[in-house]
Length: 158
Image (cartoon, rainbow, N blue to C red):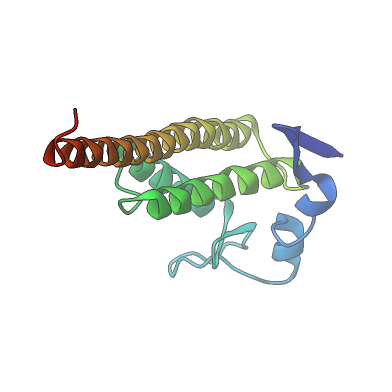
């Protein structure tokens, strides 16, 4: 089964049963990276392995920071990293929902909320990045025009 988003494959069921799959992680004996948690890991986010509850908590932390503008460092590179992080949250949430873990309706709702909120914030960050790039181009064009005008005035041309 393949899910296509914006004309590109987003995740395949086969991929969902790979590295990020909760059943393979749980069967391998991997546990959550949180010190006080002994629950089996169901997925990873970056270099860390999380149980279901801590995965959701970490995604909500990242989403809250991104929504308030404190997740990314200033500049295009910081925004790109934030977008990648949020896309990973959404991808992992989708993998969990397509996996073999028994989920109740509340768990499914949490995963759906993560996917939808990640999409909203990612779209906003991409717009912000695009506006920033356009502003830089506009500043560059204005500077070039001003420089050209100054040269014309200096040389006695109008």
